[in-house]
Length: 305
Image 1: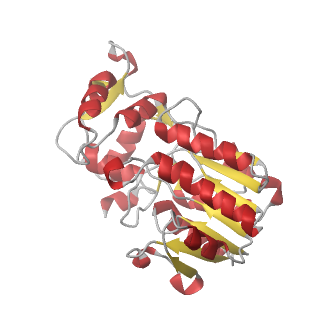
Image 2: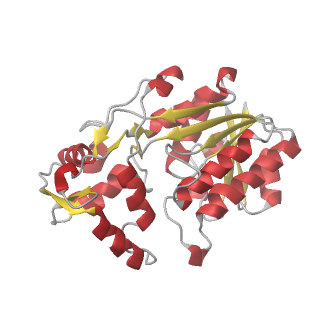
């Protein structure tokens, strides 16, 4: 199958290209100029140099394709550089959806996120809007909603690596965030980390199974508290880490003042979503024929490198 891939050179995208090639599919990947070195299996792909805001580039990637994967996404926006959730999570995928309709490419798999909602943060809201647009497009769609994704980052941004860098490695105690005034629930909000290889395989298995058309798949592994996640990351890096309760409201106030500076490690919206938690069962992974990879010292071994 010839698959048009938008977002094939980032963290998850590189694994999606791996899985497509391993499944004997042929990826056609949009690649920004200067990012050519980030494309895995270049000898087994067609590389189209261009930008996601250029309609001709989009049409070139879609030409002759049997299916589309849209996987472009950001965790933090930088409006001064034109990097916004609205631009990349809504406007860009809408252009690709419309172009796919015009080109007669019926099959479309969208990378979304667990927990998206209409009345949420800008991250959640823009992904929700794109899901709704895709559902009304007339395409044969499948939506993938993973929880937080972990795995060897391949020199890119990744969940566990960032926590190791920002929280575990520094000498300060690790923060166990809590809402309210009393720390009785400090560090007890939960997530369901899912391995990047599992997520990538979900895209390929979804492409190969027409029963996934018109369905939303929430992908998660074992549900763990924030404290458990930090403990496992610390163990994987060979460290013992002191952890102390920290009121989330204080961090949120600081973020509201300083998150416009790129060096500040977290945004106000990220704190909001963190405290909401991000959990889902592994049932949908199993339905797609995938055994969830554990979040443990062995699978986090890349943190020691």
